[in-house]
Length: 309
Image (cartoon, rainbow, N blue to C red; front, side, top):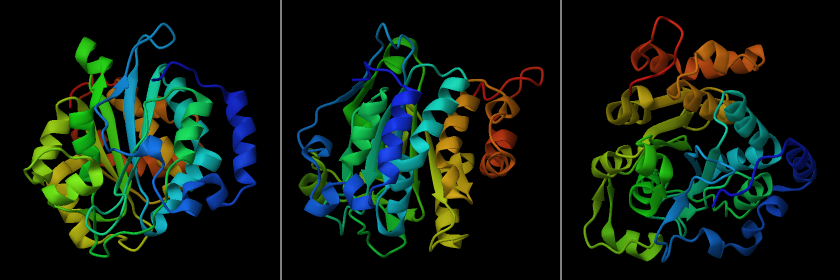
């Protein structure tokens, strides 16, 4: 996948229509109450991010969205307003061949469809179409934990990316939500709901280690919902991810934060990466990245971004 291209004109047209529709009209699976077949992880062997004549330097970026509770507002905002900000910020910062895979994450214990997986796409209509197929289940376990590590499982075991396999350049994986995570993924539940073929339960640390072999892994905490500054959630994520746990106070800026993080890792200076943002957006994104800039960035004569992670 990823054999089409981004168009601002096409995005302006489709987003105008999206803004006139209700959430259930934009996400039509909500009315059906089931996962879209195209996003089901059952019997998926691999999702591919490939170089092509249109995209010779593909950069795979997985965006795994929490669709439990109030978090359904984030994919809604993306499809109506922010897909353009994500793609244009990447392209404006020299990431000319981004290939985005959208996932949806729930709770593997209590939800019917805790893992939904799209394709790596570059084109406007393909990205919009993938987002619109997400079923916003709005479930969740009510235990201040969701199954974010499912994204690491799928990325590690069911994706194939040219950036890493041909050029030894890692892709990017962002989970987004407002809760902590389950420490263990039970094999029987994974088999029943996620297409898992193994017999062993999976631990969060093992899945993270697998995913980190070929992806830079980040988690964005939407710090506006029920778990605002929650001690358990913060301490759990910080212990696991350290500076790659990004706390965002304004979830309206998720697209800009994702794109800026990718740009920094690719060597763009933070001031340059955020130069097109208004002052409020720049401050919000900068605050979320302060730990990354202070602790993970090694500067080369003061004018480069992250060159070692």
